[in-house]
Image 1 (cartoon, rainbow, N blue to C red):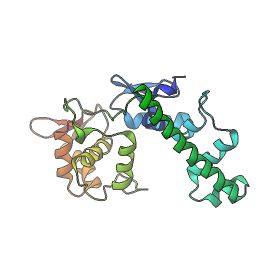
Image 2: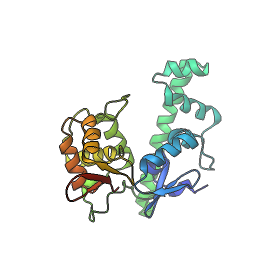
Image 3: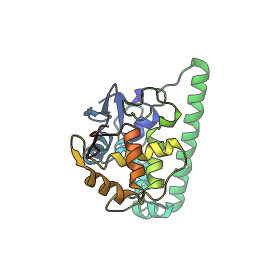
Length: 238
């Protein structure tokens, strides 16, 4: 298995990392093209139980979780309240609260240690922050195009309606970075290596947001889409 200590926090949580122009699964070294983020996310969910589940049970000498701690953390993945976790594991709620406090204290200690390490040695034990790949047309990405996996996930949760049969944008965001992040998600509703007619393109985008022409314009401008000169066919390029 890949040495997970070489990855930063975002890469560890997402379950994959970038190797040049490729995406690589942290747990089985499966590689995909950099524009196949949704496919990689699906792979990690199907093959490894999801990025959080895989990270909790990772085999590493640096994984200091006890079997009980791992069990409690896994329960918190699907339970919203301490009492739910206690009931599920047949433990006292006071035990769960104490363990949750312990987790928080260990996290604080880890952050302080990293800061101390950096202050002395001038670097961090993990790589610098990694950002999501961007279309090739964006040759010099500025802050508008620098999104971590965590920031991207937050945008998707905030702006798209949950539990819908089709992707639905709840509201138009304020700010270019947010807008760009939403274009990443919207582009994934289209298949790579397939041409869509103007009607097909408009129908898909209209189901996502009422101002579908606005979506189409940004997908083109940001390099996610290309089209024929007459505008009759569209295809995803990233």
